[in-house]
Length: 595
Image 1: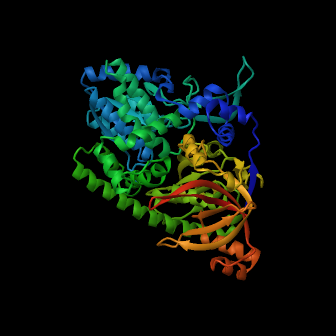
Image 2: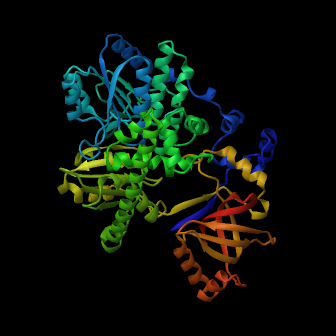
Image 3: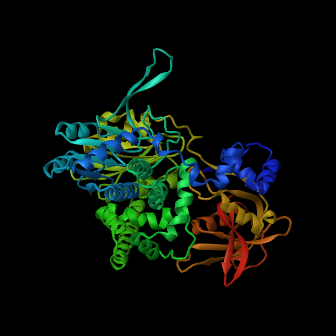
């Protein structure tokens, strides 16, 4: 179930349009994204790298760089411990290459998803100690590794944690500040030598939403400057920070948006043989790369090795200097991703069957146990189930010695905070408001489902997906110039949604199913002014056809597909595009929702 709303934010759109030389529609879209004031609008439209915050403002960067500088001078061995996802792989790459450039005796270790689980663990620390490692440098993990960091320090290791995940706190629930009267959380932080994380309670860095690779990049920038290396050299890591930001589904606002925008511009010109090979393997050579291509084509290939094999394979690709070997590695990652797609499809089918045939359907928070599911795709399956039922979802499966899983949430439900309320059930957990990972003993599975639902305060209103329309815009207003201007708002993604327009009661004149997999529906539509335009739909075609048949009857739908006169109208949300085919450019709309 979904409800459509029109964004009602007000401003003098005509004045903004005239001042910045844009269409009033574009001015309204910018206001809808809470970009207010001349300076913020200027940054949003034209923000360059000079608008990034100085990396020195990130607490701990200077301290860590100075500490590492001493370790390098003393010839100490440094080991980077990353994570097995796209953010961890890119963060590891940035730190490894940056430290190598500075002359460090450095190597890396990435935990095995199945054997080691997420982040630092005791076995990796003991291994580092046996192999003569002096310093552990984490990236994209470590902020919740209290016992592990304590163990490392006890063994005499130096530990520097760079992370971006939420720090843990005690659910007391909160303690009262005696001076201000404000409620303050009792934070639980690992005893590392240095902690770098913009989400730390005392960190004054102006932007809190960096991904792990973004934090790593900031550290290398500070280190380069401290070591007398031109900071502009660190720009070679910009595409990797951009890939990680999109792939880890970070908000594309503020600093992240600048990183991704300029990283995407630099990506086609990268000299990295591995990235070039991956772009080629994904069929994207010569294509103007967008956040979509990272999120749905390139990124999943990087993630696939950590899911089905080892993330070291993706890192090996990024570090590969020979084009021929890079091409081979890229094809292997693409094959792994194809295998991952098959596993995901089977898992989604099993999850849907379980939900529809058991009492799970009544729960506001879905805890789906698929014992034979490959644990590496649990998070992807959870995301698909969330999209289908629009409620928070945990997908759990059997690990080697416990139950493991991932969760994906909806906007009204902070998954991490809700998990804190029953943290006594978990062997390990962590994450964000919108996503989380966990492990627990199998016998506690039912109790977890019960307690997470008992604590849930989501209302029926919360569980109704809200479709926010930016502008109710008739299709006769669409021009090529406006479509081109909309590119100024890119990159699109979480925190900077693709604009959504709408028009009521479009008349459907004809329809046809296209594509080798027959997964595209093409309409010719007319509005009340008589303006005609092609409309494409890439969603569930059978469901849309069923909706039209229920509302207008099968005879009318049959006439529609025959291109004959019919009485069918459809209200739609859409995004306008230019379709280029054989040197012919035509305007079209891509339908997102309908009623």
